[in-house]
Length: 154
Image (cartoon, rainbow, N blue to C red; front, side):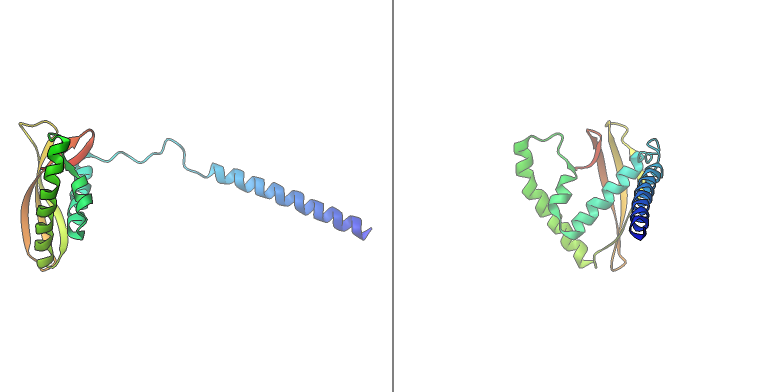
């Protein structure tokens, strides 16, 4: 009789364990967020801010390929872009040297943002760059909305 009792307990434990597991998985499925709670879309200003931060960070890190990928080449042919890329790298390397000489990049802030009155999909920015040694520099930068993606305009 003890073997039938242990078999019964084992079978009962197995059934309960299976039922518990199925219930837990079912409840876990219910605990996920509803499908209609997607994150709100970023505003154009937030997208521009993120682009400026990524661009300057890539420059300070010496990742010129990443910096160049953020540049709009909308008005250039492939040949013109191929000719321009080495010049862009040289300009970025010079800018990186200046950043390094001033103690690195501490902070980048957009201090003014004006949609262009004469050019569609262009926003003109004034950026305040703060270096590691405390020096600051104001720079002008144009951003262009290129197929729905903000890019730095050359």
